[in-house]
Length: 224
Picture 1 (tube, rainbow, N blue to C red):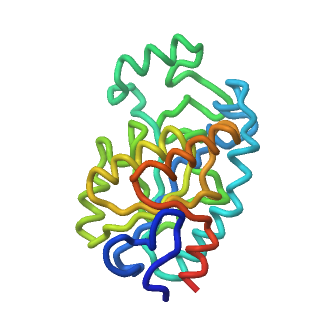
Picture 2: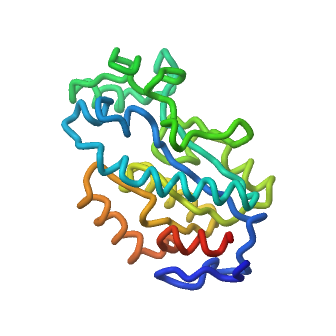
Picture 3: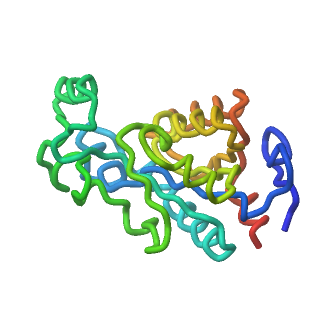
């Protein structure tokens, strides 16, 4: 196994050697409402084909990480049925847009825990033994026990995939950076509501010192 992985910024990780024992793979918010052609994002007029275009690559990375024994973590954004964990400002903004949190839709109540639309799509769904972090915010560390659980496992390296790039993925990378994790964002395994937004966010990752970026082939080669 490679000691360092080539990235666009520096040999990753910046400190120490690459070891699956100190690394976790985060798969962020590949939920039905965001990915489906007739889910929440689609109801906003968003062509979700761009998000779905990365799912095959994400599935390939998941399979390789599982085979290598890497810790795999999935996240889902959503709220309690009574919205008690959703800030009033967020509730009000959703109402203003005409899509209130908890409204009935094709896949159940919008972004409510346990509803069909809140679930992760089948092609990249978690295995029974993998961690699933349910979060009421954009970042994976906000109001969750993810940091505690990772530290208890001795994990300080994060490989990140997910949607949306400029919201939940970006928030998670920034939260992780502030907590001392060294992140590697897989550029062909993240997507936003449009290709242009994905490109813009990846460019911001490349120029800001928040971690490293590379295509999935870099990680797949290291795991073989």
